[in-house]
Amino acid sequence: MYRRRALILLAALCAALGVGVSPASAANTAYVFAYFTESPNMNGANYGLHLAVSQDGLNWTPLNQNNPVVTPTAGTLGLRDPFILRKQDGTFAVLATDLNGTDFGQNNQYLHVWDSTDLTAFTGYRRIKMHNLNTHTWAPTAFWDASRGQYGIVYSASNGSTDVFMVNYTTDFRTVTANQVYFSPGFPVLDGDIVVDGSTFYLYYKNLSNGLLYGARSSTGAANSYTTYTSGLRQGNAIEAPLLVKNNDGSGWRLWGDSFSPVNNDYYAWSTSNVGGNSWTALNQRAYTPPLNAKHGSIAGISAAEYNALVSRWGLPNWSRLKSSNFPDRYVRHYDYAGRLDAYPFDPYQDQLWRMVPGLSDSAGVSFESVNYPGRYLRHYDYVIRLDANDGTAAFRSDATFYRVAGLADPAWSSFRSANYPDRYLRHYNYLLRVDPVSSATDREDATFRVTP
Image (cartoon, rainbow, N blue to C red; front, side, top):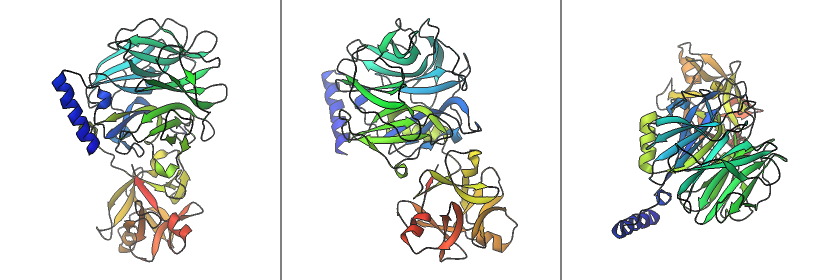
C-alpha cells in the first residue's frame, strides 16, 4: 500500500515538474508469461504465442484455454522463444524466433515482431531482418539502453566459428542497426536474457560447453562489456533459457530455467534477495506451477488493470489439475481408466485435466469429470480410484462425490473427503489413487493436493 502511494506521489511530482515517469516504475502487481508449448509425444505442441497470468509470479494460469492468442502469418508460420518487452511509452513489443517446430538445422535471418497496447490485441505484425549471416536468429531478448536512446535486441547466432550473442539497436522495432557481436566469452553461449536494474545490466545465459546457467553484469550494457560473476546453475538433467525476473514488490529476484527437453519437467526456479551476489536458492516445486506444457518463454510485470483486461479478453481455463503435496512434480491423471499420480510432463497431457463439477450426489461436494473422456468420473470402487462412466445409479453418484476441505498437510492446499465413506480421503499410495482413512503425517501428505490450472 505504501509503495503504491509513493509511486502515485512520484508520478504527481514528476508531472508537476514536467518529467516523464519510466514504465519500469509503474505499479505492477501481477505478471504475464509468454511461451510456446510442447509435450513428450508432441500432442501439446503449438508454435503460436501463448499467455498465462499470475498474481504471485510463481503459480500460473493459462489464458485462452492454453491456445495461442496470435500466430505468425509469414516466414515459417510458427514461433519459438517469445519475448515481451515493456517499452518506454508503457506499451509492449513482442519478439520471437521464426521457427515452426524443432528443425534446428534451419538458418533464418529474421525475427517475428508484434505491437500491443495491453496484450489483449496484437497489431503491426512484421518480420525484421537482423543480419545477412548464414546462421540462426534464436531466443531474442530486448532492453532499453538509456545512454544510446535505443533498444538493444540481443539474440543467439553463430559468428562463423562459435555461438555468440549478436545485437542490433532500434527505436521502433521496424528498422535496426547493423548487427554486431554482443557477448562472446570464449566458449559457445545460448539463450541470453537481459534485465536492467538501476545502472547495472544483468545478462544470464547458458554455457554450451558445460550446460550450466550463469549470470554476467555490466555497468554500461555496451557490447563485450560483461563479466560473469556467478557460479554455474542447473536443476534436473539439462537446462537452458534462463529467465531473470525482479519481483514486483522489490523484495528479491527469481531465475527460471527451461528443462530443455519436453519429456522432462518444463521449468525449474531459483530465488535470491541480492541479484548482484552469487547466492541462488533452488525453489521447491511445491512453490511454483508453470503454465501447462510451457516452453522457453518470458515474464513481464503488469498492472492490476492489465491483469484484469487479459483475463476478461482471453478467459480462464475450464479445467483444473491436482498437484501432489509431497511429490510436487506429479499430478493426478487417469491411465487405462485407473487413477494415478504420475510425473509431469506426459502424454496424453489431457489425462490430467479435470472439470470440477458439483458433486453428483450432493452439489455441496465436487466430482471430477475427465476432460478427454467426458461422461467419465473419478470414483472409488473397493476403495480404489478409477475412471468410470456414470451409470446413473445412486451408488455411482456417491462413489464419485467428494467434499473439498482444507489440506490435511497444508491448509492452503486441498484435501477431498469421500461422500459415502466420510472417514476416508482421496490419497495416493505407491502412486495409485485410493480412498483411505488418514492418521499419520505421511497419510496427510498423500491426501493433500493443490488445485491448479
